[in-house]
Length: 440
Image (cartoon, rainbow, N blue to C red; front, top):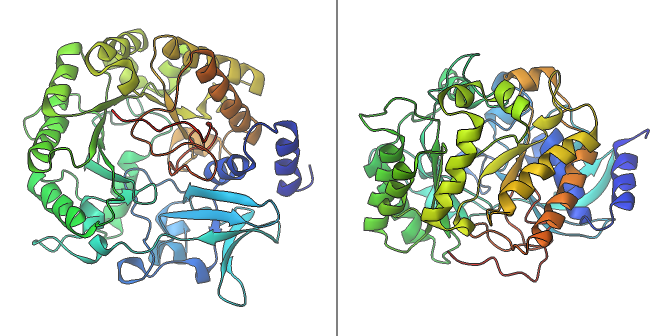
């Protein structure tokens, strides 16, 4: 194509039903963005909400490789608007890549913009520092460390177990850097609590509830690494579930409660429901049988792909199909050396998985794969999947939802270009704006 601009414009022309905002958003998510020093934050002492590293690094380099961006964190997210493409408000999770052709910088008037191939293509908005980030817990810990918010303040992200018990090359998911992210933050001397105390979580939520007077925070997600044995004497359902129980008892009905966990047996899933969880995310990661075995060796060993899928369907009997929302990692389908060689093959496989779940009333969602360099797939595929794959996936996703008469899942805010706040993929940006986001 000769330039990234030409590639992007070609895809916008070829796929006119995919919002132009989503084309840029997917490219930024898959390939990252560089930051001029003028666009970096002053960490927790500044006016901009800094990147919290809430579970994975979502960067294209390790902290030592990010230069000044490792010392003065970039913003948690950016908003794109205007420019020559007349972009509607688009919230994008920040994934730092100093080598990216996209760059955020301030102009001569101090106004931030997004530049591609040296041309300003949009204005850039950054999240203001929320008042609740300016207050600390009684033990001195920051709210950002214990209960960071993402999706422009919509979601409180509670990574209560920051490592995974699928450990080492024979068990770790091959695209996941949760364990490395833990190690790099500890090595850098940053506060990064491994197992969060339930009372700390409640105190952080108390601060958010007190100062979030606009009630922008609407949902919380309980998540962390897989638990194959126990943590603090609790199995996975009890470990994550006891946080939900404490939150719902202290703040009944304040937030939509969600949990990301393995696909667990029905009795364990019932415990989540009994503890007050409203939405269950038993992520299936990648659809293809061979790729699941290659990329998720721990999950294949402990549960197995077929049993994983059976458990997802069973969980719909407890939560209702609409409230079971498994995630997959969009793009790993094309990762070398095992992935599909063509976009057609990858889209066909992923669509088969979408049709399987949606035919049962279950609506998956997806995260755009960021090839973190400390992971096996990231090392082998530093460019990620082709942008065309991501654009065609958005088209296939929306079409499959329409085929089965489904609407946008609950707990993700409003859908549609210009409205969506979900920041780690464009699936919500690509759905019809006139839909209601729904309630649980």
